[in-house]
Image (cartoon, rainbow, N blue to C red; front, side, top):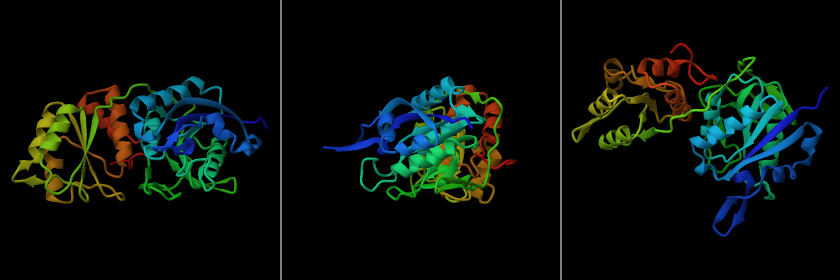
Length: 333
């Protein structure tokens, strides 16, 4: 059987960091990471591409487009792709790539680490090995490989800040596991013969996390400065009405100004349901807002950026938002 060719795309992150006077900072290029796992040559041929060396806190939508463009330009040359990335915003990047590269038959696998690859105790080497194992498989599309888990790109979230088991799959089963160099597959996502690539995002999407007593001027400001606002509400969702300010009116005015508003929940699992309580039902019935249901906030953010990069027509925005892409939202909502 022909040996598979995999492209390792380096972006920085903890996995590539070294300790300096002011803490950890990405210093190692992707080719240097490979030196720590020479046994990878037993399973595939690897080429390296260093796009940038950033702490993932500094990664922006323009970087997502650069990663997607790099994969697009080299898609025919390689059998799979591994993206080494910082963990803090990896879920956002995974979601964004899921919209920028839709229906890929080839595996596009993000991974990283909680400890740098040069540390004596580190998860870097195993995570990289697992990522290459997945990248040489027939599992299609954008995924995370981390601590043995394989998570579809639109459902990943960092749920632990220090532990090696950093990521969870939210409201969706794991695609599989990697154990002793073998994949135990549970789900095979759908793919297309030819993927659809996109290269436009609208970064003017804001997120407001409600806290009790927060004045509605926070929503007013974010709506004035952005083209879309995601509101993380409490429980299954709703808008507060305080004597000092009415969120209903703030959202209504934003919608009338042509802005997109999405309601979601701060609760990690099971999603929103605005129909349950009056505080949610009243806005669901009377305002043309969108509801995230079981989507992650990371996926909602990236999907809105992708949608608004294609259209600003409210009807088309709504249709695209509720169209499932890479299993990001429960079908038939």
